[in-house]
Length: 224
Image (cartoon, rainbow, N blue to C red; front, side):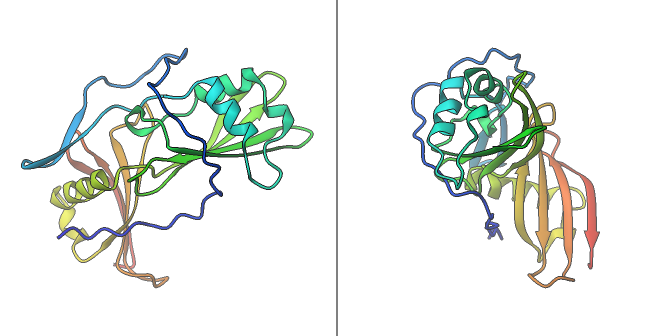
C-alpha cells in the first residue's frame, strides 16, 4: 500500500482562467529530451512526457488582466512584451496546460515582482513561479520555482520508485509529504520530502530522485 499524503500548500487564491486547445509553439528554444520516461509497476506503467512551455503571450496577458488577487497585477506588467517573456519562461510538467491560472504582481521604484501559479485536475499540488521583471526592458528572471503540479498517480509511482531504490529502505515508515519537479535542464529529477510525523523534531529525509536511472541522490536526514 502506497503511503502518500498530499502536502497542503499555502498558495495564492486561484483566478480560474480556462486554458483549452492545443499548446501553441514557443519562440524560445526547448532544451529538453524528446523521449517519455516510463515509471511504475510493469502492470500499471506511468508515462511522463518531457517538460514544455504550453502558454503564449495572450494566455499570460489575459491571466494578468483577470487577476482577482488584492491589488491584481500592476499595469506596468500588463504588456505584450512582458507576457511573451513570461510565457517563454514558464514550464509545466509534460508540457500540459493548466486548468486554472492565478497571478499577482506589484512594482516598486526599482523593480517588479510577478507570481504565476497553476495546476490541472488530478494534480497533487500547484506550480508557483515567482518572477522578477524589468518593465523597461521586459527582462524576466526566475526568483523561485516551487513546482508541485504533478499528477497524483505519477507522484505515487515516483514514491514507489524511490522506496525501491538503493538506500530506499530508510524511507520505511515515513510519509511522503512533498514531491517537487525540476524544470530543464534538470527535468527528470524530483525533490522528495519524507517525514515521520508533524512534530518539529520528527525524522525527516529530503532526497532527489532521478527517474531515468532510478537512483536517489543528495539524501539528507534529520532527527532519524
